Structure formats: C-alpha cells, structure tokens
Amino acid sequence: MHLRDRLARIDIHGAPYLFIAPFFLLFGIFGLFPLGYTLWVSLHDWTLLGGNEGWVGFGNYTELFSDDYFWNSLLNTFAIFLIATIPQMLVALGLAQVLNASLRAITFWRVGVIIPTATSVAAVGIIFTMAFSRDFGIVNWMIGLVGVDPIAWNQERIPSWIAIATMVDWRWTGYNALILLAALQAVPKDLYESARLDGASAARQFWSITIPMLRPTLMFVVTVSTIGGIQLFTEPLLFNPGANAITGGDMRQFQTSAMYVVEQAFTGQRFGYAATVAWVLFAVIVLVSLVNSLLVRRIRSAD
Amino acid sequence: MTTPMTATLPTLTATDDPEAPSRKRRRSRVHRASPLTYLVLAFVVLASIGPLYYMVVMASRPNSDITSNPPPLTPGSELGDNVTRVFENPDVVFAQSLLNSLMVATVATISVVTLSALAGFAFAKLRFRGKNFFLLCVIGTMMVPVQLGLVPLYMLMGWIGLAGSLWSAVLPFLVTGFGVFFMRQYVMQAIPDELIEAARVDGASTTRIFFQVIFPALRPAVAVLGLLTFMERWNDFMWPYLTLAPENPTVQVALSRLSGGYYTDQALVMAGTLLATVPLVLVFVLFGRRIVGGIMEGGVKG
Image (cartoon, rainbow over all chains, first blue to last red; front, side, top):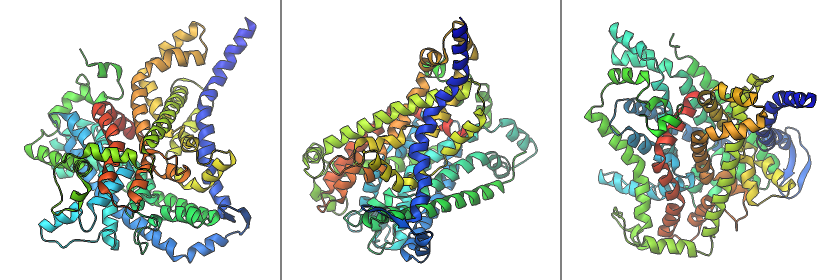
C-alpha cells in the first residue's frame, strides 16, 4: 500500500514531464541543435568531404559581405517576398470579408479557396513554369489576346520575380484568408452594432474595428509568411529546370538566398560558407520579424 | 439533432454550429451575400482550380499538342498512355517514389499525432512546475526557421549513419509545435476534468488514463491533425530533395527529376504531377469541412 502511494506520487509529478519530453527531445536534436550548430560551422573552413579544416573566425562573414552573388540573392529574395506578400495580404483580407457574408454552400466556397494549399509546392512549380513558358505557355497566350507581346518570364528579372510570386500567392492566399476569416468571426458583434448606432460608415467600421481586432492574427499571418518567404526555395528552383537549376537563371536573376545556401553547400561543397549564409539569413528573419511586429503594433488597438 | 460533426467536434466547428448563440446574431448583422459576392467567389474558385485543370489538360494530351498554338484548353484522351510512360520511365523510379512518400508521410503522421496528443494532454490537464514556460517554448518553436539548419542536419544524418536513407527524411519531422498546440486546444475544450478525476479515483495511472480515456476521445482532432500532417509531409520538398539518395526519392523529388530532365516530354511531366497531386486534392475535397475547421481553429489561436 505504501509503495503504491509512492508510485502514485511519482506518477503524478513525473508523468507530465514524461509526456512533454519526446517533443522537446526530438525538436532539440533535429530542429534546434542544427540551427545553433550552424553558427559554429560558419566560423570554420568546413567542406563536404574534408570536414572541419580549421577555425577561420569571422573570415566567412568578411567574405560574405563582399560576395556579389549573396547580395544578389538577398535582393531577389526580398523582391519576390514583397511582390508576393503585399498583394497576398490585401487579397486575403478582402476574401475573408467576402467569405464572412452569409453564404449558401459555405463549405464549398471555403474548400474551393484552399484547394491550392493541398497542391504540393513541386507540382505548383512545374505547372506554373509551364504556364509561364515563353513560346507555348498559356499565360503569354492570354496576354496575347489583349495585345501584349510575349514575355520571357524566366529570362528577364522582374517578370521572373512576378511569376514566382504568383506561384507563392496561388498556393497561400486562400489559406491566409481562412485564418483571417476565423479571426473576423471572433470579433464581438456588439462592437459593430454600437458603431452603427453611432452612425459609423462601413469603411469606418472596417478601419476602426475590424483591422484593430484582427491585429494579433495579422501579426501571426505576416510572421509566418515572412519566415516562409525569406526561405523561399522550391518555386524558383523549379522555375529553371535543368542541370543549373540551383543558380536561379543564367544571370542568377531569381536565385534566392536559400538556393544560394544549397548551392554553396552541395555544388560548391563549402559547408562553412553555406552555414554563414544560412546564419545571416536567420538574422535577417529575426530582424524582419521585429520590424513587422513594430509595424503591426502601430495599428491602434481596439479598446 | 446536431450533425455527427458538431456532436464530436465542439472546438473545431464552433463557428458552424447552428446552435451557437453567436450564430443568430451573426446572421442578422453580417451583410447578406449579394450576387456580386458570389461572382467574386466564383472567380476566386476558378483561379484556384484553373492551374489544376490546366494540369489535367496537359496530362491527357499527346506531347505534340503541348506546343500547339493556341494552347489546348480541353482534356485529351492520352492520360492512360502518359501515366504508363511515367511508370515506365527508367530515369525516375516513380512507383517506388510513391511508396516512399507514403511511408515517410505515414510514419511522420503517426508520430506527430501521438506525441502531440501526449504533450497536448499534459499541457491541457496536468499540473506541473514550469508549465507556462514550456508551453511558451512550444509556441516559440513554431517561429524557428529550422530549415536553415540544413547544413548541420545533413552532417548529423551522416554521423548517425542515415545519410540518404528514408529515415533521414522522416526524423526531423516527428514532432511539430503546431501539433502540440492544436491538441492542447482540443483537449482543453473537449475533455471534462471529471472524466480524468473519475479514472484517478479508480486508481488508473496517468499513462493509462491517457491511452484508455483521453486518446480515444480525441479521435476528431486526431483525424484533422493527421490529415494536415500527412499533407504537409507528402508535399514536402526541400529537405527530401537534399537528403535522399537519387535512386530512392519521394514522389515530389521524383517530379523535379522528371521536369529537370534533358528531354522535354511535358505530357509525361504533367502526368506525373497529376499522379502526385490528385490523391491529396481528393482527400482535401472529401474531408474539406474538417480540414477547413482545423485550419481556422489552429490559425486563430496560434
């Protein structure tokens, strides 16, 4: 009996830790450790085959700052990120509003909107690359109908950014709209009632109630899009099929920084330098997330 | 009588529950859908489906049609032919890659669902020191760009002798912060404390309570989290592309090989893409209501 009580006590106090341990253990080994160890590797001359070939301090970082290919990749990453994210957020907000109406066949519309999310990123890359091909792509055919000359989407820089941003937006806009819709539905209805009694217009209600109440969710959606956008890899990789896919076009016109990490690690076999690029990219993500949160915080809170 | 969905899924479909008090007020407040609303939605759904339709068209045409101008806009009759060619293609072991994806996604799904339920239950119903801190850590992990650790992760797989194997594609995805958080939300709202108290009075250990009382009651949440996780793993590209041996890819990696080949057999590429895409899109359509509920629930609390 006594032993039983002690076992029960151990169970009560120990079981919770036992239950959460697998998560932290596995995340620690396969998530946190590699990310942290990236910093260590970045301070070494480290190759794919030779392994650790000695400490170089900030040598890799110095090299990075004068590496034109890196800055080029960062420019591409940000350009695509902005071209994709800004319209995506606006459309997702609008779509959430539309879906918030009392609709017939509500599940049909909601599912229809997020079907792209179920499509794999590789499939998206392949389908859109074909749709954007210069000679036989359906996009050039469609713009041809309104008299625009064919565009070499994967040759010219800005068109390639637009094409890749289109892939990202096709896949994620509906998903983000649904998350914003969930937040919209959580806004207390009496806020709108009293605003209307006070004679506030629909636009006024949107800016003074909806947007502030959506603030935490907007923050969430923007942060997730930022983390994903700055690590963009697959869409631009598949946009340039062939042996040199990793360089993102003949003139690296759409090589993103994540692609540059992989190029350095596996084509160049320079693990140390690749880790440096990855670590700087990590710093960039943290920085952009901070800027985001400052911007979103400036939205007046609703109370 | 409520539908089975609302009876078993109180959290996930709260917004669709006709009995919910907020529903009535919402109906009276929210603008009624105008024809314009439907027009906008119809346009959006067309844009959603358009690229997939384009894929079906291209996958069912002979390769010679694909360079025709104007481009073909209706499906052809060569789908079976193209699909056969995908499976017979010697450069890409397509059937094997489908099987590999199935295995990778299944193992990761079982692990994520089980371990998330365990941890989610602990966070929702058990008392322990440092609970809030640990929960904050879980949420924090959702914000960590783990993909950027790919160089050491690759090295790690070499150290433990798994480089190139299917296990190397599975191991980094055995747990997700999202899963733990999602399960916590569900357990908090779906499992009454009395249920646990009663089992304790009967002398059941915490582990036994979890497996015999809690886990069976989590079926709806398991289904949603399982579907979302399976989808994510099936569709995963970057890490499998880097880690898997070329002769043993997942289907997404095999697709990229098909499209990256020197030949330009686009009908074949599209047929492969169709094979890799259609199963999931079908699942999505069949279980759409649940998945939508899961996404909306996960997002709003995250």
